[in-house]
Length: 270
Image (cartoon, rainbow, N blue to C red; front, side):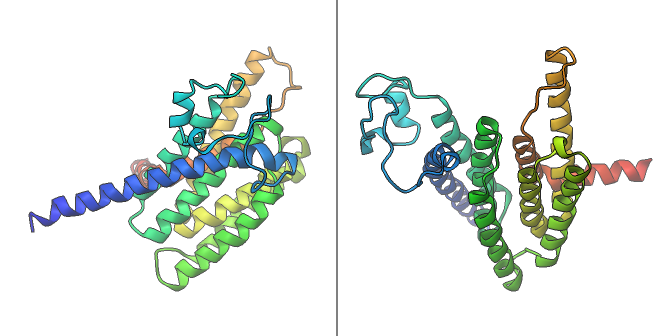
């Protein structure tokens, strides 16, 4: 029995490392997605190239994080600076993938959550830069994650299609109501993203949806106050809400059980 414990630990560690490596690769792809999707360009072809000199990125210069470090953040051909956002995206995605592998025992759950977090990374970058949440990403994600949830629920793999539907209606419907009442305060892209978050997290448990919504509203509110203070009360500055929806979802993925338990404990003592 004692010899089994180190073996299980090694298997779990290997699983996390494999997820992290895939996260690096996916993160590299996400930089292409975040750059091309808002411009309505193909994410498949042509190959990535330097925006200044047009030189195609060689395979040896396209290794996640490593190539950026070896090139000191510059194009090999012309010396144009390469944004640190590229390795940051790759490292962040690798960390999120590793976290998903550690947080969820079920393989299908871990893969679904990892893919979901990758989508949130891409959406956050795009919304922060362009103030849009592209339908080209959100609509296919509804179909893909909806199918995964149905498969997981049918196979008894710790997912619930009913809770996924409730999460979608509660989170997406709640933001839709806000968007209708305060049109300038919420975009339809945010509503669609909230519905998707509700669907995926709802399949894991409605507590995940509640924590995601609470964390997003709290983070968005704090950021809005900070922007108002920085602008000395001027109200013309709009901030994208997509990154805060994504942040709330990330908090929920990794801490929803603990946060909901602590909250219920406090209610019980009140």
